[in-house]
Structures are given as structure tokens and as C-alpha cells.
Length: 164
Image (cartoon, rainbow, N blue to C red; front, top):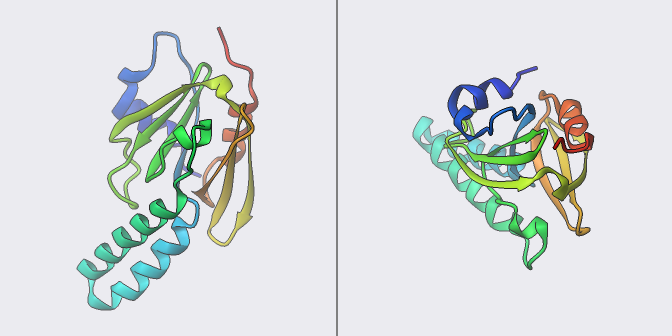
């Protein structure tokens, strides 16, 4: 099981405030993204590596379009895309990553107070977990997360009361 915290600390440590503790990090895609990437990548893969790459990008774009949440809820303000979501003892940090294959947090695209998240839960599915983020305003956001990540550690980090 990969420890995604190491990637954040290696590439984005400067976004952490002094004394802030990084608790857990997950790679995520928009809900339905794993399926879209698999279908698009497999079909386009018949055209070779370039076709597979283009197919994967098309699958991600389709999943992002479907996953947008309308309105002014906390869930609607949460970015959707190829993300690394980190939970610290104070905040939720959302990093964009450059591609499906990449685990590198390219840039910070959003940050929220940790207490915005009421809880997280997940159900296992084929090669992924269906992750649900529940916000304090009652809104929810569904995401896909890889099956072989420390999702239990992520849930524990969300459940831990904010420090400070």
C-alpha cells in the first residue's frame, strides 16, 4: 500500500503551515472515472500507446463533466478532476495531478478548514473504492479512489477533530 503523504511532502511541503501535521492522502478521480478511463483507454489502446493515452484523457474529461456538482454547497465548491486529497490536523488540501498515471501533486488548487468535512465513507468496488465526502452543510460528493490505498487511514484522519 503506497503512502501518498511522501509525495506531498516531497513536492508540496511548502504549503503546510508551521507545525501542521499531514495525516493522510488519497489519489482520486471523479466518480465514474475509473470506468471511463478503462473503457476509453481499452478501446483507444487498439491504436497503440498514443491512442491509449488520448483515450484515457477523453475518459477523464467525460468523467469530470459528469461529476460537476451544481449549486452553492460545500460539495459544489470542491474541485473535480485528477486529484490528491490530503487531510492535515487543520485543513483539507486539494492538489491537481497532471495525468491518471501520475502520483505527483502538481499544484494546490483548493484548501478548506478541516471541520468542513463531517465524515468520509467508502464502499469497495472492482479495482477501486467509491469514496463519499460528507460536508457539514449536508452536501455530499462522490469520488473514485484506487483500491490499494490507505483509505482507512484517510477516514480516520477525517474523523479526527481539528487541532488548534
